[in-house]
Image (spheres, rainbow, N blue to C red):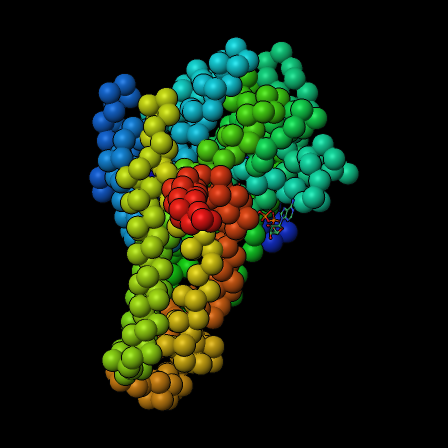
Length: 469
Ligand SMILES: Cc1cc2nc3c(=O)[nH]c(=O)nc-3n(C[C@H](O)[C@H](O)[C@H](O)COP(=O)(O)OP(=O)(O)OC[C@H]3O[C@@H](n4cnc5c(N)ncnc54)[C@H](O)[C@@H]3O)c2cc1C
């Protein structure tokens, strides 16, 4: 299996990456982007990541197809443990890609049965190649989308959704752009899948494929990493963060063996939703672990401020505990009652979406609790530069002491500031609301899968028993 060093050295290729207006020569040597690369590389240090599969031999457990409840519980635990290992920051590197692979394995079978295509074989071969080489994958699903009320074919500029430009003898040529693609610039490969259901006129946009990150015509523009560059007192971001890119396909050639859907529009929505179910299961799993950052920070600030026993503090800590455990409960509930399709265990979509929606709707309360317990100092703490000045350090240490020593309290304040009063806060609030799909997308999925029959039967019985005599 690969080591962190082997993974990092493979990233030094001719991928086209831009950061703050400049072309990046080597992501691994770049002062800022190398942190995201090293964060990704920590995946290869995870204990118990390796499993032996009957046909593939030793592979990463991320790429082991779940066949049962037990497999899904183990997958939840793997994602949770990896996030904990990376200081509470999700490590997407083999998680999102395997979510897409499992969805493609299911939907390619259905597409083949209807269209007599060869997608299942291609997806299986690609899955095996990725697993055997222990590669990392980014997934670009979200198109830039243009006017949200219009379908892909109705947009003023067709490039607002990734689409097939032309079909050639050896493959296809694609153009367009995807938004917010996590860790693309520091991944080995990129999988592209549709973002929504499509109609026949959208068929050019119904496309799924994979490309190496260094493919000609693939351009990645990385978001500014403000949480790393703009906060000199940050404790987590200097070691672990994930980048996102605006991912542009400028007439990219994709050979047939890497094409997994090409114009079969009626399967675009099914692929999008099946991926979303796997990926939201991943989301509630890592969010349970990420919650420990906020919970631990709130407990630490409560102790430092001398208020750990106050009833209102216990109340607010309880809110964060509930958030964390609801993430974990929905993952375990979804794993316990999966839908088994073509010998693949799909996490229960209802329980997965309920957890994801709870996370969307309640993360601001987690932040609110941390700000409340911490006090205004998380916005007004003197700078790291002041803290490093020997004269000022003494003064600041003296005046920052509370229930405990000033220096210790300053460390707690720095973490609480990073989590609840910095650019990291804005990034995480957006992530908790939008990543793994918008609130509306989850609500639609939830209502589709909700079992209303018991409720209907119960009320019908009551209404019918009240017969007018
Ligand atoms: C940190 C982060 C990481 C991410 N990582 C990835 C990734 O790795 N890969 C990937 O593919 N995606 C990724 N995403 C994208 C994520 O899935 C999307 O942000 C999410 O699906 C919402 O899409 P959007 O951002 O285009 O928002 P929009 O769709 O523009 O949503 C904005 C608002 O418009 C509303 N809206 C949208 N369409 C309609 C309509 N037709 N009618 C009425 N209202 C509408 C929405 O409900 C919402 O209220 C990531 C996002 C974030 C924030």
